[in-house]
Length: 316
Image 1 (cartoon, rainbow, N blue to C red):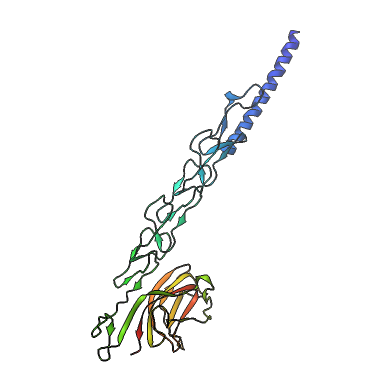
Image 2 (cartoon, rainbow, N blue to C red):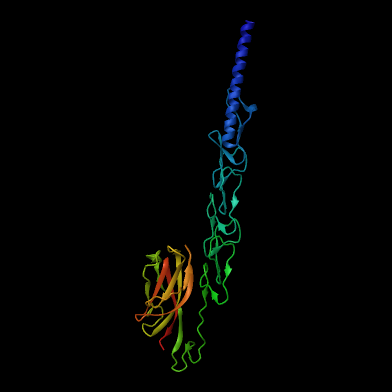
């Protein structure tokens, strides 16, 4: 009896030791999967772990420790879920205990993001952890992406709207030497030399096809300006415009540019503004009008075109 009891006891001890060693192996696997650990002191008599600990950066799911996903974090131990990063912050790594603030020159507009977005041309951000970028103020511009500060326009240039990517030359009518209506006039026959008008948008292609082509072979955009926006139907020698490229597309070779002229042939070998890929660039232009009262806008590359009239030069 005693000998049989001893044999049974020894067999039970061997089986218990094998079971314990197996549980320790399982605990090592679980710890490796999620950063948690199974403590030998917490192994129950029935062979199932009674307690396991998920470390910060991981959370409990289906009895496993899983790393916090991208765009989220876990700050404490034994968390049952993760927390999404707030707007203005992001997380681009798994298993983290906090989120990163969006750096200056960028923003994060929504929660749970794994990357920040650089400020686009025309905007900037001088602080970190922000949810949007600021438009360049009047008199300043931002040409590239990820700007921390806007750039002040050089003397003799300015911007007409906030959020500009370039400055335009300031067009100042000459003083009236002989006119009585505040316009610049010819002394001999009292014909105004320049007549300013309230800015009037005569063309906006954003609702249709882009202008130009990648190979530069596309023809110009012809725009009727006489009889528009305060200009008379006849007697206009030249017109003062503000021309804006929107979302410029680069040509096959070199950078993009725009030439504005009176629909002459051959076209002038000069540009009124230059643009890079994706840029929005305004500039002023003074050009003669054709015999039919039109101007032509040629684009080397592709872009949407905005044209605003702000004055004209009468035939003298």
